[in-house]
Length: 102
Image 1: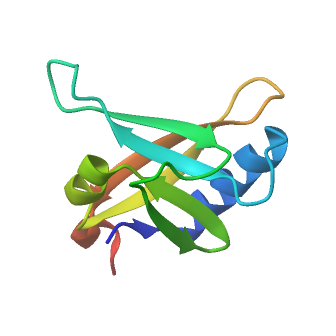
Image 2: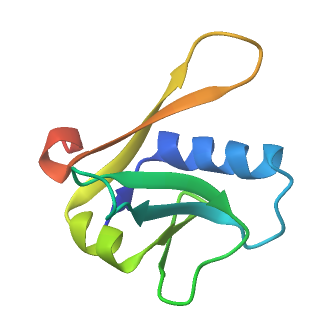
């Protein structure tokens, strides 16, 4: 199952609160089958779609579309804050668990 770092959980919670989403909102990760290469789309969602897997970690909620859930089964979701304007911006990264584990 996808693991969520503490830093990623903080970023997700910040995005949810700044988006004025309802309770139960989360970050949704979905596959993009119409693209030439395998791709994922991240978006803030008010709740999971019917077939989504719901994960929680560090107080954050992530919804995984079924194909994305399978692709991310052995991965870790992490984030870096991008320095810039006053508005917070994040760069999410997905890595194999072994790269982020001690």
